[in-house]
Length: 328
Image (tube, rainbow, N blue to C red; front, side, top):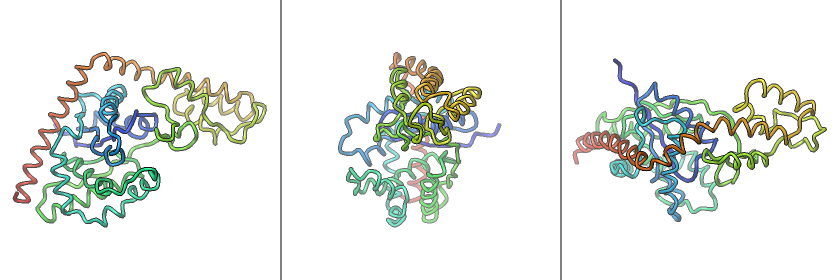
């Protein structure tokens, strides 16, 4: 029997997960569990790169993130789920890789430039923020992952990891495979105000939201900006609520909304109410799973400990090879 190829990915615990996280990454991870040997980690050290001034909520976000993962369908018997800071070897490999990574590689990173602009309210002029791609590289090559599931906009993250692995191998011999980018489908899903869904924009629908919270958020969603009255024909193609219908409503409902919006047979309020019901129903299995794990804290602790131990075993073996290669 051929061994499964290993993949690895992680998320920063900077707040509750929302629908953008679900469709952008988490659903793809769930679907990959049968095909790959999956390692998924909660990147709490990475959270420090932007939230170093206020770390009080990180532990809570770590726990909630694992609950979101489990409720979405990640299975501890099919995936290795672990917390980055519990595996100290990540910091050790990060230090070694930082010795060989040229600074211009980090400065040209497009994500670095984008984040400086987007998070202009924070002081990101730190070594940790500039060097986070090196830590990211350590996270990935530590487990000798065949690939990293990413969207198109995240391919540069994997490319710099490949360059760092290649440079290490050039100096010290072939220790690390160069990971591939595994491009995944990422449906378009915007926040309630039509901007990118984000906790910081206060426009997110969270996976942990109650039905009442979801209904209230959907009621405030922006629709066709040119439709001022119910009697005005609408254009579903520019309506954010319709994008949600296409994800969560059945085909018949989508066709009906598309038709009746254009002919002003249905208003935005009713359209939102219909979509909210479908969204709430679609997320009900996740709410049930989350409630199951929330009432079993020891089970969650055991899942964390087991995943960390599996990851630690691999990391220790890798670091033995690294130290032998660099003769330290």
